[in-house]
Image 1 (spheres, rainbow, N blue to C red):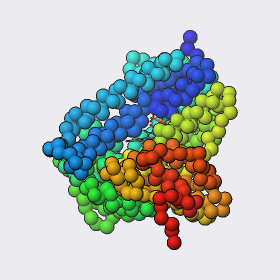
Image 2 (image 1 turned 90 degrees about the vertical axis):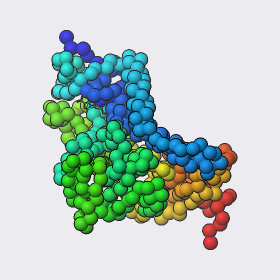
Image 3 (image 1 turned 45 degrees about the vertical axis):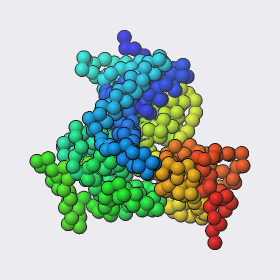
Image 4 (image 1 turned 120 degrees about the horizontal axis):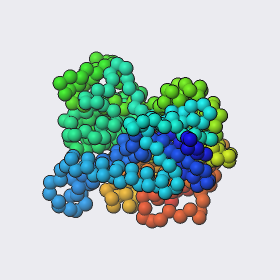
Length: 461
Ligand code: FAD
């Protein structure tokens, strides 16, 4: 007889394993079906390996500039093989950790491809054969894949996706990155730091086009300082690859040559075709359509994370997992404030934002006053030789509510939690004490400046 569970989760990425654990904590019997590596994209080919490589090159850059800190440490150079094995070891460690965590919550982990059929039947296809389990409720957390462009498909060698870019066997002499979004800019920072000549080509008017224009302008300037050329407003019309090199043709007639072409134009939701068709799921393009309770069009079937195409972020998937798990366990929760999902870019310097941007407020007809403070006036930042960047806090002039925070600076992703806490506040909160000297004081100054009462920003005339 088929084993029966209260909830079966398809996919063990951050969305899948978080939903599974939340269901198990509510005393549901839970199984997770995973066809690839436990931990999904985030752990295996996304957040964690990219941050491991970024951490290595950050150290490299610090060491190269040690003289600025009064140190003499001789020649420093990257060992790409060791950087790769360090990254791989981190991934393997966390993979074991997530599998252990899932199992310690009493969740059964099945290896194989899960196909959901009507009536709560889940077929699991694995190398050793197929089996069927049954579920009262199903949560689809099947993730996403890199978007492939028909005119220049991935060949895995010269025209690559972020997956290959994280694991190249050697440092290429040159790389063209098509797409100046988060993944493109992060990978550019990795490769430029180890001596690769990197050019980013972005079709929109600026790199990081989802942020306010000042962010793209500042980042273009800062990335150039570390050897990254950004060509914005340029459409790629074709890529010709052969003999270990590629030619990238732009609409204006320019042709760029490089050893590798990384296509980083975004990701698209994926879900098993047989599941979609078998359940007759309503779709939004490639993404599974869900309501605010993460319910799909099929009764008792929920979906979340990249598979629903909302945030394409791991912490977005975590938030949706909370909602899907609650509803799958007969509680009521809704996913509402997507603009409160923070956005983090781990470049040099970093970019971090939460809430509404200045542009979004303008588009919504909201009049704003923008408080500003910069890192070059902050003691800790200057002591760390990290005075680049600024923080902007956006206040709605009609009701004084803080609408959004945008930050560019060395460690601003670590300040997103505090920035989130400011959203919706209507005055400077005196009990909120920022320790001195810390980088976070720049957030406090910008927040105060939004109300015209900054201590260290000179009055504006
Ligand atoms: P996934 O993590 O993609 O997991 C889906 C899982 O489902 C996979 O393991 C897949 O094998 C499995 N699966 C699919 N179909 C089936 C099936 N039929 N049967 C069984 N198993 C199945 N996000 C951030 O928030 N911060 C970052 O710094 C960040 N960096 C990134 C860097 C890169 C290079 C990339 C590519 C992504 C990055 N992301 C980042 C995005 C993040 O990885 C994703 O948003 C996140 O992994 C989505 O989680 P998920 O659970 O929805 O899907």
